[in-house]
Length: 539
Image (tube, rainbow, N blue to C red; front, side):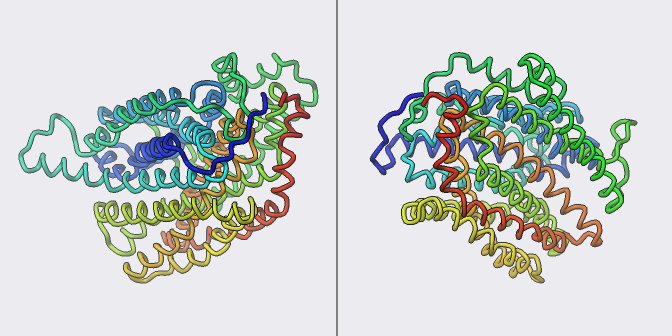
């Protein structure tokens, strides 16, 4: 790795704006194809005879498991290969698998399609972040992260609105005597959602690959064997294969002890949590064609799997890439990862429960929820991201990175009070008014958090470091958020609003983590190059 001239311009180039638009569009497609299953679930279940247990697996477990596992080797490939081509290939791939859902006649093909979507989408955020960090000046990265936030917001909102409207329009057309071509409404909705991914993949393929590290003044040497390194990461983190990796790299007794003791601790924790949650919220066993399974075992089994993957990842860093290991164990970086995962659990809980609250408490139909709540959420998150990006850049200019941390701290410090206020609403108009304020406050944290997190990683390791964050975020966010809200609701007679209010008790811990980061981020950032050099990095 060699030093380059530090860019002096703060202006975003035409290429930079082009990159923001395409990366934001990729994020939008990722959320659209991921979340559309939730609005179509009732029709799929009725049409194919699939139970709630199988739908829960498709929405959460199958997707999260493969998304978390493959984000790591793909994140490593982001750091070594042509990012624009990798993202284009993966976008076309997951679009194909999303469209494949339209041809499902049972659980198996739906599961295969969700598996493919999960693997393909695992590239999106690491590649998009890495491309944008090398396309924009350091002082304008808040805008870049805000652009990605806009994509996430639009994808989430459109998944509900487009899914509901497309399916309802197709079914109404068939009911009125039009030709269905053998498709039900939910199948047509999958095809509509998947179609834009292919031309977008072509545009990203044609996007010029930015010079890695140029905006940081650290131009990275080309990776001689990125695919071999990516395959090595997959083997190193996959439970079972990880022991072959330890043996192949002549890991000493200390590393074997850490791995096996860590596995024992993880297994003990999962067994304990299965016992506690089964007692707190007893659930009937899931029935998969004659095979029954305690749903809590499935939930905590996936969580334990992911935790072991994270342990294997950090051990592999230590054995094969000591500079990345030294940088990744930066205290501020780890604290931001945990903080982001916990806050994402709240966000997923809110998005999981709010549509159901509107149906149960205020009597809205699914189509009304898709249009009203889906489009409102998209609009609010878009406004929040557009405000948060430039605001983070402005605070960064005035106060340095402390300004960004203060923005995150302010957003997440006051948001629980507005959350309690929102989910105490007694009328629909009050709910929408309060939710609008709550959502705008809650959207301010993400762009500065991404900028802070990626600012603690060298250019050549941003993909894999962000993938590690994705695994932690998936485990805590998508893995635990809706699950905990569901258990709390069951204990309160189906009161989802009360469950969301209770979930906000995790916020003081989040604030505590941010206070620690505020006190030490500057020195942790300053030590980044020294950490890499101590691991043998040639800078």
